[in-house]
Image 1 (cartoon, rainbow, N blue to C red):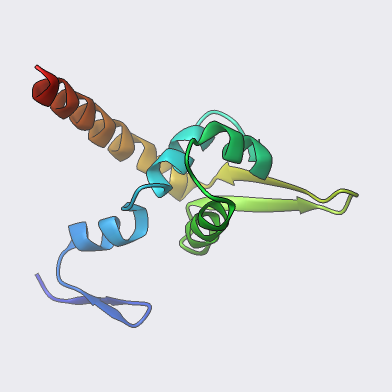
Image 2 (image 1 turned 120 degrees about the vertical axis):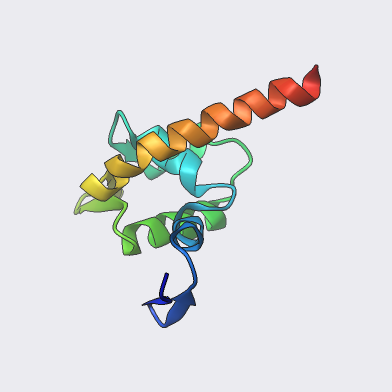
Length: 112
């Protein structure tokens, strides 16, 4: 497979690209929570234990930049911002579901 260049970075395989965009601790949990509802920042913050404001903000920006989520800002006081999945984001849910199921299986395996 030939090398793939995206945003100035060389990727040697498609899994590397996916893991760059969706990997880490927080991106998949954010997408997972947006699969059924449009949520405000405060709702995401409340629903995702242990994530800091700084990390949530940076992960939301990266997901928006990569086309997985839409951000809609309402010109009201106080400011209201809502996040929802794009078609690309909706397409990631099947993958996240499989990874989640695999992870739950591994957790049971090491518990037992």
